[in-house]
Amino acid sequence: MAGFDLTDLEREVIRPLLPTKVRGVKRVDDRRVLNGIFWRLRTGAPWADIPARYGPFTACVNRFSRWRKAGHWARILQAVSEAYDGKVQMIDPSSIRLHQHGANRPKKGGDPVAWGARAVG
Image (cartoon, rainbow, N blue to C red; front, side):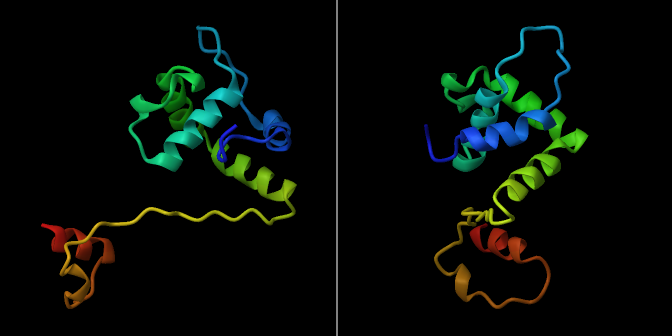
């Protein structure tokens, strides 16, 4: 079990919140798909690079998209946070790569993400 895979406690908290509507084909196990989604979000890899142990990558991307549109993710994160007495913390380790001189560029307002993008270009 990887560090970003669901624990048994998290799975039991989340299970009642997951949609159960079957869409024509045999449903891939929710835990496998969720772990695949978490793997992809943690690594930043393309959806197609999700390891086979998490099921078809199409199942992961489709459920992620459908559940996002339906608002399921907000309920899932809220339930997990409550299960841990609100002590769940998330850190986004993503970063923006800058040109070596980009950090010294004068900032003239606007979008900070765009500063890095202009410095790279």
